[in-house]
Image 1: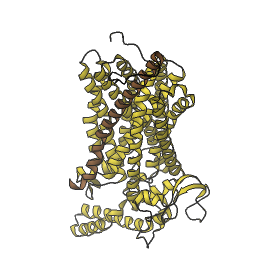
Image 2 (image 1 turned 45 degrees about the vertical axis):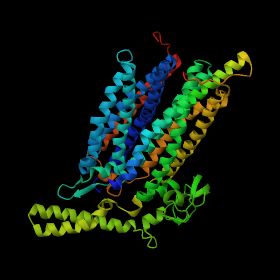
Image 3 (image 1 turned 30 degrees about the vertical axis):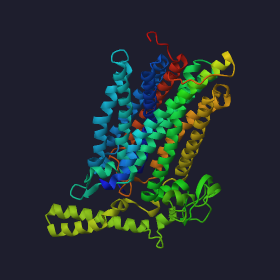
Image 4 (image 1 turned 90 degrees about the vertical axis):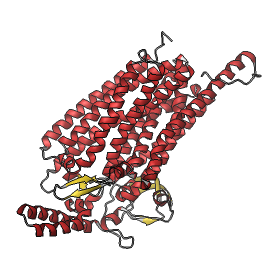
Length: 513
Length: 57
């Protein structure tokens, strides 16, 4: 790691963060809006009411704009694994490549093929075939997300593989362990359901705008009922999967959990902070209070993490410096073991090259004894394993806070829609509109929590980000960073402009129905 | 595969979730159509309105 330019690591990380955050502006809307459109079209086919065809076609138009731009940003991300993260791709490509390939071959082609029928085939195929295509687009886009999230889940909790010292690569040993990795399914369900929440907010916000403008009232009312009904169920599901996801974090990434909660000192009956302001001068080694102000529920963190009020939750200090009482090994010790593994690996390669079988076997035995901590061998100091606590803490609490508000919003909007009073409640319509940007912020905050919280690891406890980059100049990464920043900003402006134009035009009457 | 039963059950909740959402949407649309019909009839004929299902919302 000493040989790698730190600015290269920083620029590579910044570029990937930029691409991922931009990509995630478009993806969750596609994941959810495809299902909302499929439900609307199902109602059209069930009832034969032309209102529903008009409604479906309007939302489908907005979906198409979003889908096209989401695709462009996603493709760039896959290329970045080769250009900026070639060491990562070399070390874990045998495992990480499989889900990505399945995503491309199965889900992406399914999604794209049926998208063409869905969008252009209204008068070319039967009603039922068209409906089937719409459902297959929804299922396909979500299956794409499944394989990507299986890959991401594996990075958070690597399973089903073994390290081959001859090739210095990780190789897959159990495909099903990767597919059924607890981090994969909790991440998949939490991510897609949060995408459904965003899509519901999107439909509610635009429909609320129509109601405030007193135009397309019947269209807006019906769209809001679909979106708020869908949104209420999926937001409750998001809450459940979020809880399960947090439990996986507690088990497999305790440092991330400690950073999410600003927990410096571990404790039994650990409280959960519902709202707090971190002390900006707090450092790992001092004894200052980590919070300037906080509202907390006693025992909440222990309960949520381990289903036990009295369970011990390790803090950042215990994970870094160790805690004999709770059998937590210090990071210093892990680094020492990791360095032995790195040295043994080098010795093994040298001995093998020299044809010295005895020394090679000895080095391999030493490596296997310490290989569990190989990744730690590339860290400089124990404190390196602490992620950015303020970013992780605030991102996590923003996501949870906004998510809770969305549940309340869906209840209020659905209730007033059912009593046919929503169109008279200006404040609630305005809340519906303003909740859309909050939805996007919550989406991005979720990913920031997941990815910033697991730093410095590209793959948890195995590969630090500094070891994952390509051997290229930081200048070229910096150049492409600004290029992508301009390109993505242009695409985002284009999307917003095209969408607002379509929204202002509104749903079009069906001349032939 | 037994070791993965938790994962299989969780994955299986996805289609169930979508189906529940679909049924919930239909239920609410049906109720809304009924409400609108009541309101319309109330405006036209007063308070006493016979019950009717509204299938075609």
